[in-house]
Amino acid sequence: MEILTRYVESETDASDSPLMRMAKDGIAEAEQRRLRDVTLSIYKYGSGSVRVVNNAFRCSTKLCAFQLHNVAQSPLTSTTLVAEPTSPGSTVSWSVPCRTTEALPNECLLTVYKDTSVQVQFKRSALRTAVSIVAGVGAAVSIVTGTVVLAKSEMQLFGPGAASLGLGGGLGALSLSLALM
Image 1 (spheres, rainbow, N blue to C red):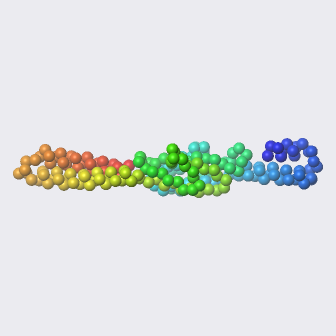
Image 2 (cartoon, rainbow, N blue to C red):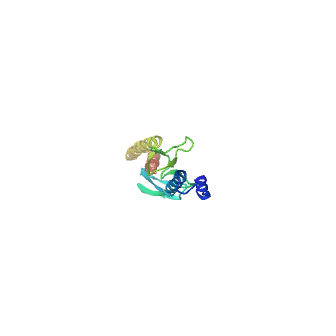
């Protein structure tokens, strides 16, 4: 664009010459593309938010859209989206055209040249879900055992019964916190 502008300003050729007309048309087209904004839409599934690094924008609703302003006299705009799960232990997956790296799976690298939509999914990790279920089952077993032992007064096992109830309560709290976080 700079070279074409210098050529037009130099008036080397007549203003109605084919080469001069092509140069002016090229400048007009480049300027139109350079100033064109593109809309980026983010569809979010699960619990979390998305931060747009180079636009200081945070998306916390299920769908959000905003304009990216083209930079560096180019119709391409590069941006980085960062997924931030609400709960720890969640995994993140992006739809195309997001590019991710193994080192930073929560980051989506985008080159946007037209209106673009991406999806991000926040999912609880399988390990966290399994631990929550095991802790819940353990809590139920401990509470039932503690209640049975305490109910049989002839056994005189108040200590083990109370310990079993306490363990059940602790495991239940762990299971609930893992399920809700």
